[in-house]
Length: 317
Image 1 (tube, rainbow, N blue to C red):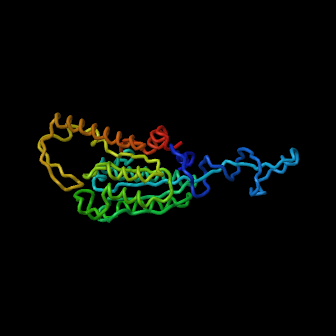
Image 2: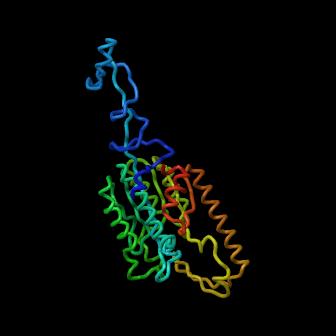
């Protein structure tokens, strides 16, 4: 937490904030940091006149200060069935660097949220696709370090409610509430937009209905500097032919459809080719809409993601 407090959100765009914060703005207003003078014009606040300069030059000048404004951070987290996939450690193993996609997304969301709260930025969280939940669950604006416990409590409740009884396996698409799919959820979030700022999507982007309509809605809504963080497990990115081979029955966690497959080294090779094409297409789709796309591996420690990957990408600094 101490290390996170030394960082701040960064944006490739400049947005006006609602309240005073610790982010330097291009707007000029009031703060403790002096920037410049300008000539007095009738109607200016007399409290901003520099009387020392007036005493020397017999002219009225207004002091201009560097205004600091808050940045809005909106976290949208995919809690659908496919996010339960990943590398869950066995008994006695440490969970560090080994987790499901949902767990990893929650940890990263908590880190980014605390980073923003520590700098007096506004944080809003939306969760979609959770089993049995209709539409989008939303945590309204939070501000300040003391709100960190509310953020953590909401993440725990919204992301894991309904998973204890059903387990992480066997969740079907019909268990997801109406409007909780990727496209419907992001389209709804875009319509509900309040304010402007940095928007982070944490998802594996593997919805059966695609991702195009949802991301397009965010792009056309305007006011967001969007980061699409695609959370994938090592076994999804680099399946080991030795670990899974022969005749297997695969079950789609999102649709419930089953497929009988004979896994060979050639099949694994084709899978990797298709995955590479998919990642490239998603990256190009995001780039065309001025969104940043990055693949986040669940075996990458959160510290590395925040202090190296996202810092290098310009999201924090």
